[in-house]
Image 1: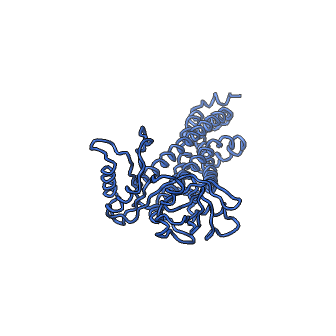
Image 2: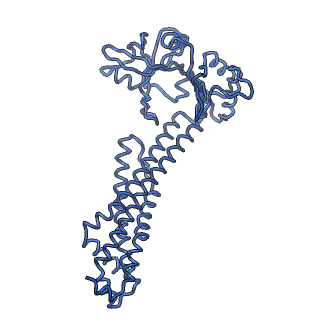
Image 3: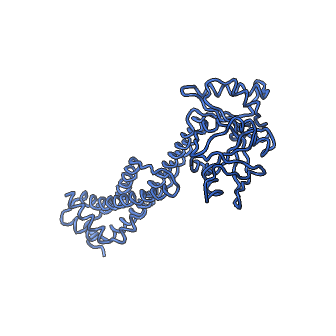
Length: 401
């Protein structure tokens, strides 16, 4: 009996193929949108987590000022080389530490020029940022102490300014300073925020301060803890030491921020997870719209087939059989829409992942959930028209024109 009911459902659907196609369009869009949105969102979350993992889970960032809702850092004094020296001499359990000072500067090489972020730092930067060189060398001690200007460039700078040859050993102008290129960084690509990490020039901190920035300010300090060390303990030591150096009395708020990489990773991935859920919920609304469309068309179908229903009831069909027939039609329509929506959603997610350069994170659970939800939509929104058909009076149905 069930097989015969399914057969009748398919016959009714294909008898009005155009109308059936338009009916399932809402389900197709809903299922496809949910799968595409959630898959792309999961890929974004994975990319953020991977980008943060490149820096390591044992990394801390120290910046002047307080950052967060309702807090301003505009009047916080920057760090100095003395602060850096104090941290290096007094902190324990630290694998590497690097000062960072930055400024947008115009680079010039021959007829080419480019505005790029120039970073003043030392060799600790390569450890804390987990960044190696594709060719060349790091800074010599004499260069770090403020000798001849040397610089290490990112892949983007190399491609834009030295497209016709190898930049290693050549020189370029960084602002007003002639700088010898001693190394080229490995490619890192875009950050989770969308910025090009390879569009960078590194110079020794003292050269940067004296000849580019014109001051001794340090905008941030990155600290990499040794393996197995408690970063919370190191964070507490940094805060205690900086409060002493910056003469912050007990009871007053810090005028600096120390952030653990693990906290940053949790915040970033948590935010993208929430956004993914929100996008999936918004896309899921179209599933409800599709269900309403199915109910509307099934009601129209019941009206059109009133005489057919009357004949079936008159020759002995039970109410349950008529109910099952129309309910099966609604479920089959929904499942058709669900299958097509799954294929469409995965195709859109794959295309979006490639375009956005994020991982394609296939989630079988969300696919099964979307498919099951499409079936539930068919049952819920198909039940009322099916019940109406099953409760028709046979005599009145036979009289229907």
